[in-house]
Length: 233
Image (cartoon, rainbow, N blue to C red; front, side):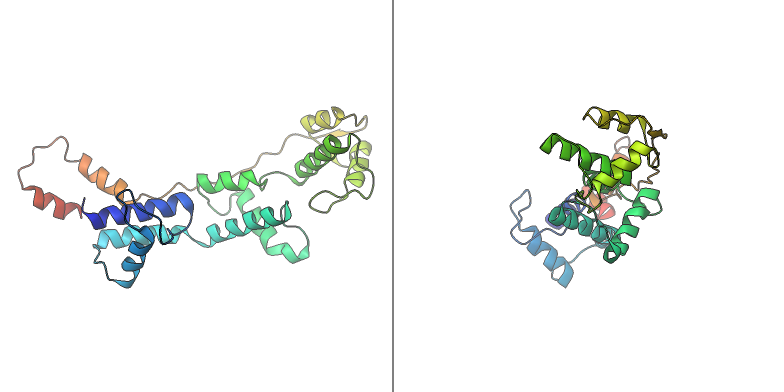
């Protein structure tokens, strides 16, 4: 593999792994600046094969609207400590619902990132977690007017759970009772099943090269190494 092919491979791998372009100053395994290399690829200063261009194109397309939306959700969670709520956040709420329903395919890595900020939790589960956190901090149940991080009234939610007007799973009921919250009239429902459609990561240039190389492992090479390299690249 020549130096250009190695740089293309490392740029693509960086994009897939980090969900962003390598910045200037980020060095390759051989100590070359990947950010500057990417700039030369874009300007045409470095000549690329069609296969290398396709590889970079696939990596670039991975930074799609879905990736940008996920980053926006992560940033919102980082700043506010909760998921988007309120009428002004309708678009982001619709985005979250599209991931929860499986209507928009996401990668395994994206799924894990969304899971980490609670996107796939139900509204009830997020409320239960907020009540648990309050109990752990103050050693008592929240009363009316005590808000969850998302701005919902935890005391009113507890009244609904106690009366049976708001349903809980058995696990959620038991967790609240372990905090000293009695729920004799709680209505029990089955745990929700979330359907998420996962889209696997696309093949990188290095994957394709290794795949092609493997086809030759069982054969005796009759042509020169130069011919094989031209075929691969």
